Image (tube, rainbow, N blue to C red):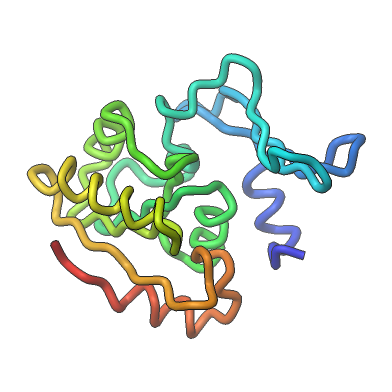
Length: 173
């Protein structure tokens, strides 16, 4: 129901576990499995991570990017990054709202000309954008998008033309 086709699910190596939950592997740059994200259907919290998995040390989706990217889109969640990827936008997820220094260093390793923050349309997302702008503005050209209501995140924007319009309407810091 999230709008992903079989090709996208296969590209990301996703599966369904015996409980009917959606399982997303997290890979290293060398395509080794570092851990798993489980999006549970009927449980709280909705997202569970493998025991010992340190999400602050990875950029979800980096293994699918070329060595360098011109414009890199950064999202909070795995589904958001998978959605942008399905629409041709090079993207990584920080698997939370706030970027760690290790994640900023990983972004640097991609040598992007521009970083576009695509964080959630909520109070935490706004705070995270402010922090990321301060933490990264001396290293990259940084912009951010404003996700219009009623959308919570980029994955909620199902129409490709609307998604493109939102992503192109950036604010530079």
